[in-house]
Image (cartoon, rainbow, N blue to C red; front, side):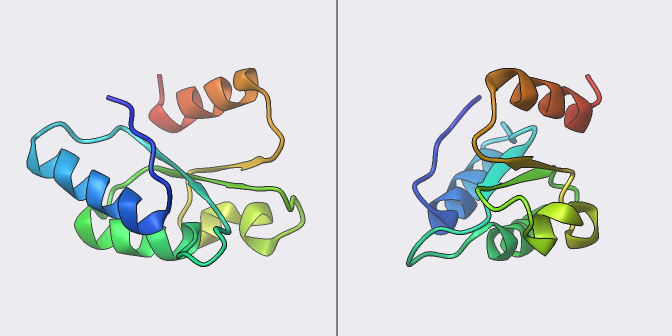
Length: 99
């Protein structure tokens, strides 16, 4: 299943609902910063309370942000710098999911 969320709060609701419906997401891709909303770091913290094993990829337009550089230290399975190509996303998702 694939879903899009407009912000972190909606992503948290979608993730929780999918788990409750016994149709959990395999992974999530979060934007580091969303204006006037909670961003990827805060969203991941909330998702970890729902599912400590959540597989999350962080994305940002700032490749020099410490969270992008040291994504594993911040609990992310991978990181993508924007703009990225579909092939880069595909490769990272396969690595994240061990496909």
